[in-house]
Amino acid sequence: MKTSKNILWFRCLPVLVAVLIARILPGVACAASPERIVSLAPNITEILFAIGVQDRVVGVSSFCDYPEAATQKPRVGGMSNPSLEAVVALRPDLAIFSIDGNPKAFEERLRSLKIPTFTLRAKRIKELPEGIRQVGAVVGAFSQAEKLSMELEQKIAALEQRQRATARQLQGAKSKVLFIIWPDPLIVAGPGSIADDALQMLGVENIAGTTRSPYPKYSIEEILRRAPDVIFIGKGNGMDRVSEGLIRRLGSVPAVRMRRVFYVSDHLYRLGPRTIQGVEELAGYLAQ
Amino acid sequence: MKNMPLRIAVIASIPALVFVVSLVAGPHMISPFTNDLVSREILFSIRAPRSIVALLMGMALGASGAVLQGILKNPLADPYILGISSGASLAAALGIMAGAAFLGTFTIPLLAFIGALITGGIVGIMGWKRGGLWPERLLLAGVGLSFLFSALLMLFMSISSDEGLRKAMLWIFGDLSMSEWAKIPYGAIFVGIGVTISLFRAKALNALILGDEFAHSLGFSPHRERFLLFVSVGLLTAASVSLGGMIGFIGLLVPHIIRFFIGSDSRLLIPCSALIGGALLCVADIISKAVLPPMELPAGIVTAIIGSPYFLYLLRRKNVLSI
Image 1: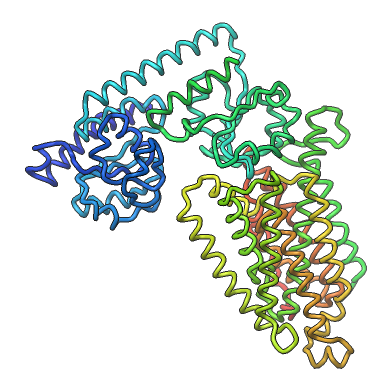
Image 2: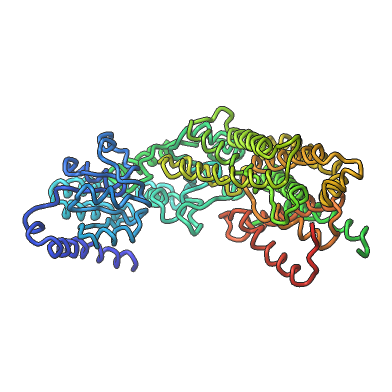
């Protein structure tokens, strides 16, 4: 119900934005696609680079660190607190926001300064291909965006097919998994996070799936009680050292006993072109 | 006050009672005589160390609050007012940013402890004039340093794009979930030393509260006593921050609550504040685990939510006792 409503929104948005651009910048908007794009979120920067419009990106947030070339672009500040001056000084003809992490007020402020904006509303992995198409549409890179989206859709379909096959084999027995974002204090991936989405796609049970927050502070007691079969630990600064204590204390949990604790890359931390690789990475570990 | 021995007996038995409850109660009840392996593990390696850390931390905060309100002669003083916790947070943040992980899970507590001691030292130096520590100077030096260090911490947090730092700093706002047996001896030693010093100097603190002249005439050297008590407060605060970050309310208001019940005599006020501080943090921790399982709330929020209304109620009902 909710998703279908969302999808309807996604379909309408590019059109709305195009209309908006046309109204704000008569003459310019009809003429061509935006030439000076500012990306306010790392996943948007990754999408823009992946669909080959990196030369038209004139500014990125200070969290945009992938691909390497993105770090060479001028910075406009953090995701939650970008600098209005820095953005305006770049004279962008399009600023792209992410629904996750960018403040709505900032977008409104830019609009009031007659700078066209677009917000990527995709939050789930399955919404990503459609989101990439929309970004492709607003920046005028239809074919590349279509190609990337198709690629991702195929990968998602392949993953789902494989998952259905394993599910038939296992006859409903789901392995219990925990995805740790940070060990001390213990923050895990809850419902609404990309990692949780990935675990659902892979047909395993996220033991933190019953919490109410996407990144809840979780109880160690509950990990012992719910006894996960596999533990994933996300990437971070010296993660193995920081996690040592936690893993020692979880010694009796099946995942630790059977040596099924895996340190994974940061692919699942943002919803972008690399996210599916992150899901495939988890699938690889789960198959071990 | 009437029935003093009874009041003290009640106060002394509360922490023991709370400790037992904290082992049994939680998101799931566990019988202490269970034979189930998982339950036993939860009981002995998760709940027991956590409750002990909560007790130690609460004791440190309660006792240091009582002492500090006395030496600064200020009812608004709490252990964090001297900037010690800001210094601890700053040291921990700098260590995390520099990628320090040399001691694994001990890194942050150790950095915080060192930061707290250094800050305590600076406050002491700033508060020193003409051969002794002066309450007003200490208080102002602490507030000044606290602002400086908090601002520096905010600066690092806002310019750093290291997600790890942001998450690790959640610890600063009070977190008991990582309490383990290995941390308890260190915490216990410093809390023990701090409480012992303050108990032995409690009589001198009583005299100091009445004024330096008065203390002098009773045979105490005000500067020496203030220095010793300041050292005990520094140790207690440093130990508590390093055990579990910052927990509000206890250091400021538990001593006031105790004054309502047993009066202002420091010889009783300090140990009773310690006991009730420990018990309150332990209760808050039980609640923080049980409200939204399997999620955990920060214990500091719970101490304030359950403690403040009770304090306000007492304030209406009873006469305010001076320090």
